[in-house]
Amino acid sequence: MEINQEIIKMLYQIQWFSKCGIRDYQSETVIYTNSWVEASEHYNSREWEETTLKARNQLTLYLHNNFSKEYLHWNAIVKEAKIIINTMLSEQLVRTRNEFQLEDVFSECVRWDILNIIMEYSYLSKLRKNIIDFTQNKYYISIL
Image (cartoon, rainbow, N blue to C red; front, side):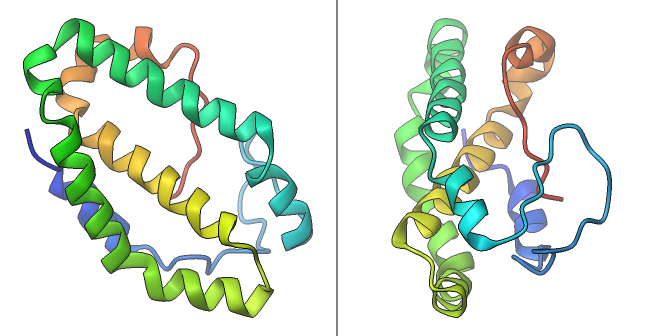
């Protein structure tokens, strides 16, 4: 198992935080906010933390139960993904935090969410056959 390079390429192409404040499409799953203070109430909420933890736990449990051999590589992939995330986003996160006077939790939430995206994509081939069952109770956020 290794990191899915397709998602890494897509993540590197994103102009991070360039769409903040722009309501460019209608969606029932996207929550638009009017300020960074309001946004922080969402990303800093217990509900968001529980949602992301539940999604991560569902993924790891599924992999453990169905693909235990591949799941053994989880920690190594996480370690590599964290290095990629730091290389890709550290400067942008610092700039955004400083510009809008955001707390450290902002950076940590972004890193955690991107890590989850990388991990899901890295195990995507294992999930494709059962994607409907796996995603039934999952909340997705579109970043592209």
